[in-house]
Image (cartoon, rainbow over all chains, first blue to last red; front, side, top):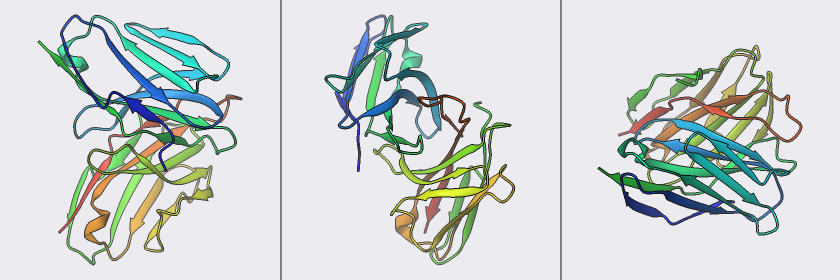
Length: 112
Length: 116
């Protein structure tokens, strides 16, 4: 079963704009990780946010976590055409051998 | 390149044949996971190793699937008597176990399986 649900399913923006992607989950987590996947390729780790953290930054990425609402958001600022990819949130559930449970992903298209 | 190496990257096989995929983890990563991903879906967990011990298997892992990690380093995933429904990308991922609330999990490039 899929634990995380990303929203929207697809997002199309102009280069230079910001992209915001949301993820909701259902049960208690240790951490939440965001990944990027280019077509036909493996997953590239973007950022990990622990359950006791509320916000993290990495370059043009900003991730927030609200455990009371069981939700996270990924913001990509000043988007580039190279950011075009699928983005997944994955939850590390409490007591789950640290395996990740993924949503279906968000398809981001950045128009040059 | 995350450092997790998977081979082969692509495999086309006839229905009923056996296939084996190999994963070489990042050095010193004692946790190893196998996932399966089909088009338009997120990866789905198949199995998990802590060193050489297989500690968890998903219900998705039918009797035709077997995974090993004999020396706690590389791992193999074998699918026997392949079916068309096995067509997917098989992803290997590894991590350490040092963090109290989890560690970054690194994925390989995946092995594409097409069963014809």
